[in-house]
Every structure is written in structure tokens, then in C-alpha cells.
Length: 175
Image (tube, rainbow, N blue to C red; front, side, top):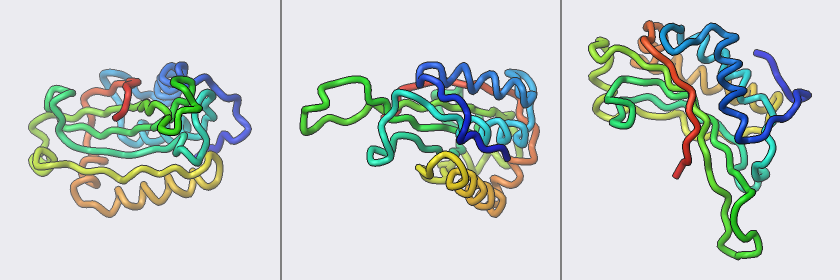
């Protein structure tokens, strides 16, 4: 895994384009990919510093891995590799109730609806929980811990070794 603590920062609005470039460099396309390649791209992307986000006290930059079958993606089994950004450029910061806007840059990897392991996902799926470790070694350690968590789950383990049939990078408002 490569760390990017000395990497050039990118504006938060440009982060999906940066993620798409990293994804393409790792061989992940809309039609073909492996979960390993998607994960390698995600590990690289979450180490890129992002401008225009809140600090750690507001959980300004974190990541989450989610899996399931969701209506917003056509009820396809999917693995979501997401980065949550707390954008602090909007609103009146002097307001005692001010909070940043949360945005999620996400790579969803899709699988065939008839995958043998898809049934359990339709009943709920799950997630790794958010992690807001700092970019650099702390984030690399958090990613390694998340990967160990994934490797220990029987359904996720099979999903991880399955061949995806699509992938997509998006930026959406979270929450």
C-alpha cells in the first residue's frame, strides 16, 4: 500500500475525478474489474489529501466499506468503498448549530443478481463502520484492520473472490 501524506492536495469537488483516474490506473472499468484492484485503488485514493473539508474535530475525512443490495443501484448486490468528506464551505459558521455538509465519494462494485452469496445480502448487508484515522500511517493501519475484518466474514470473503460485473465512481450528499 502506498501512502500519500506528501501528495498534492485536491479540491473536494475534484475528488471524484481524481478517484476515477486512480481507479482507471488500477484497471477498474465500468465493465471489468477485480475486487482486489478496486481495493488497491481505494487504498491509494483515501491517502490523497483533500482541500475544503472540516478538521478532525468534525470528522472531516473518513472511510467506510459497505455491502448489500440497495434499491438506488437497481437492487444489484454491491460492495461500496466510500470516503466521507465534511465540507465546511457552506453556511454561517457563527451559528451555534452550524455543521459541515457531508459528501461521499464512492466506488461501487456490482455483482450478478444470481450470485450464490447474494441472498444473505438482500436481508440486510452491512458495513465496517466509519473510520476517521489521519492520512498516512494511521490510515494505512485502519485500512489494514478493515481488510482483516472483511477477510474474516464468510459472505464477504466469497464476495471478495467473485468477479464483479460493473463499477462506478459517484459523489453524493450523505445524510
